[in-house]
Structures are given as structure tokens and as C-alpha cells.
Length: 73
Image (cartoon, rainbow, N blue to C red; front, side):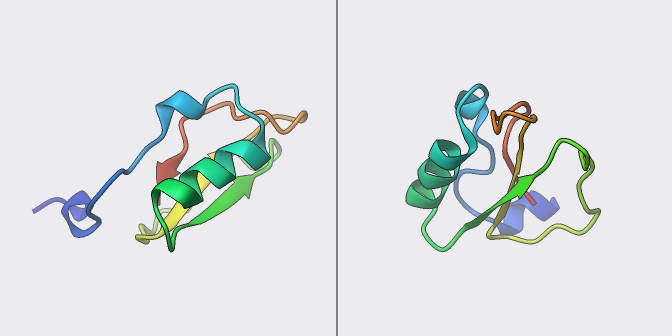
């Protein structure tokens, strides 16, 4: 069984690349109620090794534009 099997529902948001951070966070939290979208600044483009359902990482550039696919983690 994959660790992804523990978190049902949408796991990534490729359609949000190019969106501003604020809009992306609102969309993620609307589509997955109870999920917390965490903004990752450009100077910290790594993600923790632990996987937690209900947490989505949103990696942005210096202008707060989503640069990588937001993923559950």
C-alpha cells in the first residue's frame, strides 16, 4: 500500500502554476476543506520528508506566483 492511499481525494493542483499565492491557497482550501495550504518562499524550495495529510505546499517566487505544482505533503 502506498502512503498516498492514506489521503483520499485530490493530491496535487497542476492547474495553479502561474496563479498568485493568495488565489491558489483559496482554491486549494475550497476544494479540500480542512486542508492547510503552506506557502514556501523562494529561498526555501525544499519540502520536509514527512508526509502529512491535510497539508499542501505552495512554492512561490519573489512575486508570490506559484512556480511548482502544489502537492499534498
